[in-house]
Image (cartoon, rainbow, N blue to C red; front, side):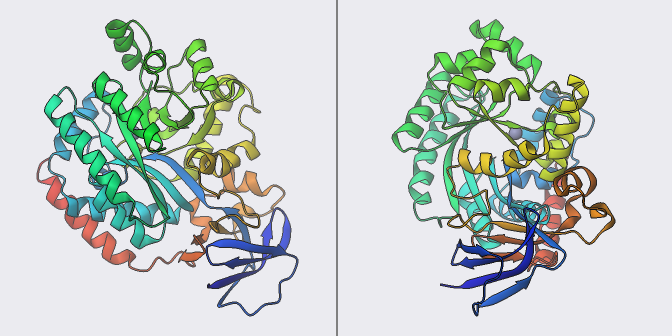
Length: 419
Ligand SMILES: [Zn+2]
């Protein structure tokens, strides 16, 4: 079992030594005197738990900037047209590019909803991150395609049993408007039978809600409830358009809602996210970036800042999203949703730790570290990233980064021929 010792790092405002044994945090003390396999100096560094990106489509990095200034449904048509040309090689390099970008932003774990996850898993495993990869079911009215996806979902679930402990499998139901009801019910039962999480998009746009009421007589949330799909195993992206009853349902069922403010703002989907109401009702609220074709980057730290600013602005309440709550949402609340023993720097938890370099203007003076981290700095303050007890970025250097950039650019050039 390898050991890694972080010496005299700032943790919750105090200088500490952190000893990592294997993939767990073994001991935290004022001083630890052991001869570890590897020692990292914590000078000018503050340790925070690794951040979580709780909703993304990672290999969409290859479509960054492909269609700008368009509304969601027009944008989706273009994305779906381009996706027809995506192959496993593109997924591999696109996912690797996403991992590099996320590690540089201090993310150690992400929840992904995309294609060819049996290829994406290889990219994730090689970068050393954690992830939960959702098999995407999206028939779009094509029953044959959906039947094929149902078979493939089961096959890949079987294969996922050989994945490392760092990568989980989940069931992805793209959205209530792209999957047939009977398939959504199959997927829900499959998830329950195998104790898997369900990842979906829910109430993202006003149009989605209006269409649902027109077609089914109820909002997407009430429809999901009626179908018996909602529980604490559901992680639903967006939840921008919710009425009081929707919020009560999501709270009662302990659903996790991923707030993707940058994507919502950029696609003009909405911004009056009911954070306080959802939290008060009992829902678990976390942050995501969405894919880079809509949000353009995978910077969770930026999402945290934008989310808080938007809450303060539209509610006219500067206390609408307090600093510690923002941090908890991006770390331990996310870990709880993914059922991972991480998200906090305490003994016995998995060692997913980010070292933030505080020797910069953004952290001077350092009256309030969280305020500096969220409102003053940007993700270039992330210096070193440890995931599962292993250093995956040191001094902002990730091994193999250049090769990934070159190959991802090559894949994007191939894809661009279809633009
Ligand atoms: Zn999405």
